[in-house]
Length: 281
Length: 125
Image (cartoon, rainbow over all chains, first blue to last red; front, side, top):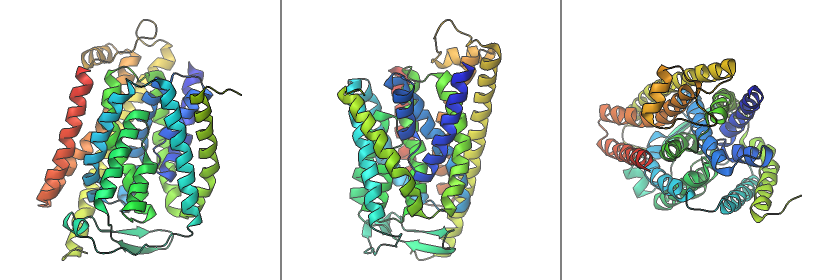
């Protein structure tokens, strides 16, 4: 029992650091560790994971808020889509065969790894040229952030708001269904579709994850998917890890963050896929 | 940028500081509750309940917390943690209201209503 608590605490610290740096909410790391590594039923892993997502988000927003990197209006507006999606997803989890949860999870990880690799190939962080956008202006979504690595204020605009909103709904469903923060989808909606720079994208997505996860976590809380012996030490570890991670994130160049995690994410993704397909090694 | 970027930037900084504080208090409070529960659980080696039972109705959690049952206190901490993002949404509504940004008061209120619906589904389901 003490043994489990200490392992969970350590897993939490690791997931907290990784989650804050990548903006992936820790959930993508925790469910594989609990299911593949510790043989826990995926239902309880998802329950622990959704709590981990809230802890990661809350822990790291504290640091981001002080540094003015995130865009609160963008977060609030898009949360309409993610919270509705999260409720739909959480209700779906009860109906689906766990096999599909593994398969979906595996696909998600492989996709995220590929997505990060693709961005890496695109080269260094450049501010993308964006056409002035009517919806973005009306909703006051454009913003400014201070880049610590480059030591200057960077103004940016966003575009393609309806596409971003739709992807966010999907991100919400994935979050509720798999107990993840679906930060990869959120960052994708913000940076690929709406052309927001990576740093405000990651911290805005981090902030959104907490609210999205709260929507599905209440459903999980009352249906018994949350085991306190696992979720509590993990959440405490994550709170510590998230604070450390968001400090690291602000001084590390975005490129290095990705290089470190791509192979790990791909490896875990294939493991989950094999588990879903019933292949054993 | 907007017509008066200086004011907007300053106002937003204010809003974000308030929200940051509230979030901090909420997170630290839940962490303390979880820590107390976990410490009791590890020291006594007993969850407070028979077998693998986990309390999940609010009434049972509160009653168990009163009787210092470790699992009840841990679940209470988890629940407080779940509520911190909800609290953040509530505070944001007030902050946008102070800023006279009616559009975002409406948007943020809508998010809160969706979260309350989730709560209702959770309690009933």
